[in-house]
Picture 1 (cartoon, rainbow, N blue to C red):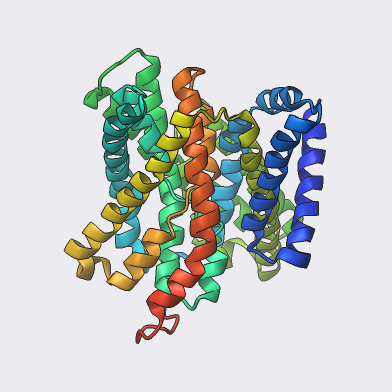
Picture 2 (picture 1 turned 135 degrees about the vertical axis):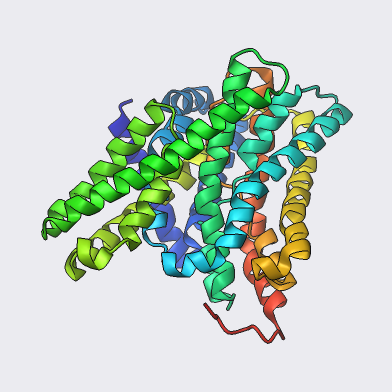
Length: 420
């Protein structure tokens, strides 16, 4: 099958499931798509027991599609740029303290907490795993994904500043998480069996600082080009070209394309946009990237649902996966509530906001893409099962319940207005 054939299948299934969801089920867009595509995948596996379905052929097609490359090398750049483009920096910077703490320190601390607990828990179910792989798992499962939760939060009368914290955290912690994972993976591939602080530090700085720097440079270059013309078709194409070429180039030279896209998106959407783009151009640029965001998110959640066809559900893996759900929730609890308790006034955050941020820390497609990019081994197979179970719980349980949680948290509080 060609790439175009895969795309036809994904778009047709996405459109079908989106219609079914909007017509009858009425769940939030991406949660509905993920649920229906997961049911389809489970149905294929279930019917295989009674019917002679070519499940192995389906698995082979999915493996050849290299879902991890599609998500990491293609979709992530578009999604991060689109998310940053639609983010109001003047509002976001008011919550920059909490965003910085959660996106940087939160991801680093969460990685260590999850890795440590996972390392000592796995042997209890008969699984032995090296600590470096535990760190890799901590890095890939720590970044949060707000896509499925933001629409629900907006309807739950959550304060705007809480939404902004979740949005800002996710924009930056995706980049930080990818940088952290890549740096750790390079150590593993080099044959290191123990954590080398100096080697890790150099790789992390190269990826993170380099990504932010080139994001600023390319963002300013794009601003200059947009300022010199007033033709929205050309300006839309320029943004598309900078995202596609820039993301590919940065990743090729081992600089974080993810962080670069966040910075570039923030610059295009906020830096002197009244000078660089006319009102008409701004409208078309934002509408274009809004549609790109919607379509690619639909494709993303279809892809991660089909990962179930690649998973080998051994009993020990399932038990460890269930335990890991609680490990991830506990880690998220620590990295949210400890800063809130110690730095609540500095972060401008109360317990109500902390509860929503804790339960709204969903895991999504990035985590599955990263685990799929690991070298083939029995450890990868185990981590794939564990990651998949965490993501399914996160999207379907936390995603569907966050609205009720937010309403209960905010009920009766004097902060029920959506203040900025």
